[in-house]
Image (cartoon, rainbow, N blue to C red; front, side, top):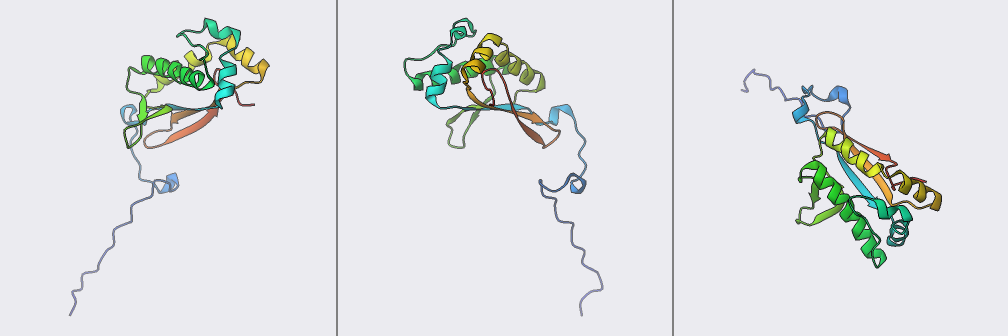
Length: 166
């Protein structure tokens, strides 16, 4: 005969996408929060090439210039963003795929204060932004990846520098 002990099933683990009320409480501490990041989705090469031909680009630091071809202009814009991100983040912000290839335009591990400084540096070129706006040009999309606490991130599409949403 079977024993009288009743079998108790464990509560199934909660899914990460379950409503917050169903998730276990986790004490949030700053060092465990997910770090913010950034995603840039560049427009087509011709638009980037035209955007880098605007007169105010000559005054931008770190140096940014139009390439000899639209593809070179796109690479120059990526390099310019990389230079700013690496300087501000301390060098550990580039994102790589599982195959070890660099994913251009993706940055992570920036910490909140560095993320804010990064955005401020991209957005500081007011004359370039006005020229982009007047010419109807945009570098593409900028998506800010911001911390929402432990295990939570929010992605926000923002206007930032030459990344203008028309």
